[in-house]
Length: 465
Image (cartoon, rainbow, N blue to C red; front, side):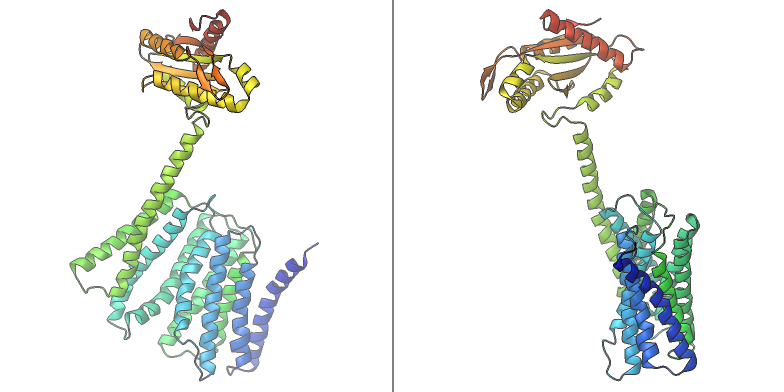
């Protein structure tokens, strides 16, 4: 049975279109702009849409929800302020509207990308890539559109930029949404989202067109295209989608392109000072700065991955390579001249049972220290588990024999532990890789047999056949 909260959210999804219908009905009856339909009902739908997104099901990417909900909320806030200032002489934050409308576009862009695409793990690099790509796009827009517009429009660079941002932002949102819908299978989510973006963008472009020609009248019926579009966008997040995964290769290509374009724009500005207004260069500087930050994060992540891989191939107690690393190296030994040693400590189990695992672990660490001092740097020594060790030695049989004897000698004198002086021995099985067709399992079987023969006979070192 649906919970009370779930019923409330579904009621909100029904109440929002009902509010639009009421607002449109009042406008059709009374064509003169009025506070109730135009200030209250119109903007209430926008805030309801933001709430619908914020309460969307948990299968959504959280960042997509936050970005789209924030974008719709900011647009609704700007619309409320603008409508208030149109009705009342007391003006509230007249300049805030431009900033809320401007912030709508980058937030909506991030939300669309994340709602129609999915990655298995969200990392800092992904966020940096998104910001770098957005800033790089801003550099292109500002460079190719802002400077020519400065020659035609009056006002500051900021006002001209905002005038160009709205239509450009609409076109970018529409283009990206269409691209993502084409790339994936058509779903209810993608189609509803595309419909909302198209409706919002067409309404915005129509508003800018009729405003530029002086034919716009406040409170026109066409304004409802904005809130209908936002409501469709909000509704899309309540439906599952056939998300695609944006690969790291695509992100890297787009990030590199943004960096190259921004660097080129700054180079032109350096060669021809004053060619671009200062306002245009800010996205370029920010893009390059974030690119260096991205490089630092990438290096950190690479070191972290390397460290994790090393841990996965290292024995936690002794710090030696583990069985996985040893078996990997054994594949190389098959193709080269060399020797495999398997070593098993004599008497370790009795000591471990008598004094406990802590003493046993200390003993293994001391054995590791002695073994490590006795072997050259080109010999791989690994702990295979318990009190068993392995060594892979490249070179002649005589060279391997000397190392095996040296390893045996390191165990010939007592170990000093909290429990007192302890004596143990070692049994070593040694086999040469003299069978080119032999696999690693065959090598291990021969070495294991030689080691057990050394333990059974008590001679300490047996060369297997």
